[in-house]
Length: 428
Image 1: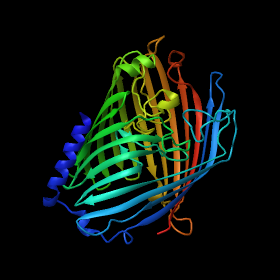
Image 2 (image 1 turned 180 degrees about the vertical axis):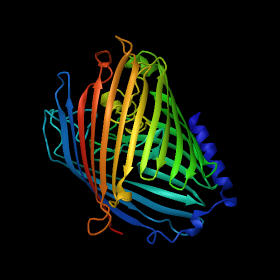
Image 3 (image 1 turned 120 degrees about the vertical axis):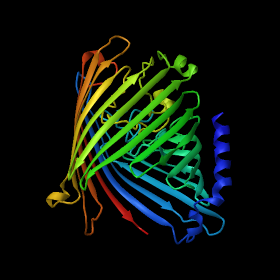
Image 4 (image 1 turned 135 degrees about the vertical axis):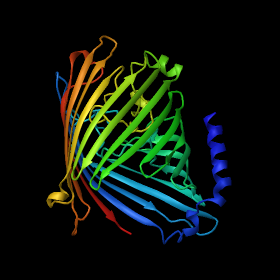
């Protein structure tokens, strides 16, 4: 059914394209609009687990090269996108590697992590008016399929994606992907995904109000729907209040529930965040709530091949209370108090600081009810503003997570540190 919807939407988009926007008419050519970028990334993650669990850490150096051509001129433009990834393992510890939440280098059959990783991908793209069809290896960023770029190397997917911006403020997406490349392993199909269909769009109704609706179907796993509404209230020149609502509904397939020993098959989770900005300061108050009968809570991320989880991207959780913990257990309710500071007002452009305190309760597991967890999150980031190292960024992030004994089946206590140094280079 979803395949038919994708086809119908694609035909509708293409048939309407002549009367609306036309980005293809502005094309300068395959070479003239092309770009080649290289991101050098040094990343370290350490998790100091509590309650007798062994500590885990990984450290690596990566080079991420991306090429994007322009489109040939004419009614239908043709172009190519490609990427090449390489990562070197700087720690190579059999004992400390292998944490599911870090996942820089997947362990092999010997139990040792890889010394290095290399892989690449390419896609061909076609553009008619302001509608683009891309086929091949891609890194989709959608609320129901969001590739994970928060570790050393990014995930990628192989398939077809149609994106249309024929009407000002409206974006429509429809696609089908049949392979997932795990961020910590080589190979185009290392994630074990059978297929995922995605469909949806977003619309900017006014300068202040934007909304989105998306749906996905992961073959033999689950169906998912997503809704978002975002409204910005301007108050003064340097003041505003933003309300952001995000919600997911997931329905697990019967066979997936049966084969993985899961209790229940449905989950609904939503968050509402209010952020007040005044000058360099931002203050956030957010509430998030998970309901339904599935003991997985909100299911996302992971790899079907060896984790028995959903293959829709490690960042497919557009919710307010997502830090180290995602506060997405069965029946969980969580509150957040957040603060942000932009130091440019104080003469240090490029420096920012973020803090959050999140507390969750009412967690249900197979053995208990009423569990709790809490997290203190701190992050400081600096982006070089000028000179030879312009755009180099250094990000230091830490989390202190404490989980009650009643919630130990769902999560684990610990202290986490992440250090990321990113240096983007625009070759042309």
